[in-house]
Length: 311
Image 1: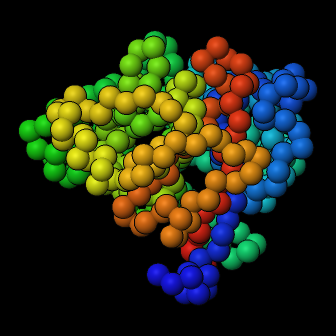
Image 2: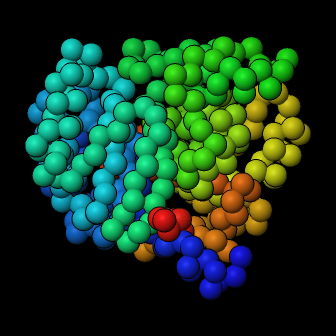
């Protein structure tokens, strides 16, 4: 696609991507790379674990923190791993109430949502808070349950699949962005317990090949990876049914083997002709602000992408 035709059909849009802030406040973490003033973004994406164990005061404090981030649109998948179910209804009231409106926050339930910005840029985003079961974490499913693929897509895996689809809202193939709380298997998911991401989510991301997949949950995996699906699938086949066992090493361009650091507060360019190729590459972003020791040592990711022009 030529530069001129791209400029007329797409609009460069800046996203600020974070996750796992766990009661973070700017005042309580003055030496964090995530500090005030934050640079402007068109869209803020928060992939979950806004607090540590939920609780009404914690949600109110989190909304105050988010209110200080300048962005036209602020989208939250705010389910918390250890949230008390009895507090959940009250939390929803807060996250959809007046305080959230004042903060400019939009709380998203599981499923697909579409937004158009003042610039005319438009995008579809799929959101889900669910992760594989671990301990007493909330919003969980077992490793044998597939929450992201419809039964017909599960069957396409043939004898390799021993899972059962429980998908109420499978990820559709026309989304631009996927935002889940947890990572896909083998992509920025490495911790002391190994690669703990979800294999079924990986199958869905490979099927859909969105422009961006953002998530958190595994703090140790904070970073960005450019996934070239042809390269990824070749490596996956070479390593067998066990999946792709890989390290978390910042930004990985699978097709160039290039590693770079987070440029925040400057932007990471993810645009037509600059890494993104529709149906071929996906930018995976683990936006965890907290590290493995629950210290706010990770910077957010500020990414510019080319979104479709509405109309």
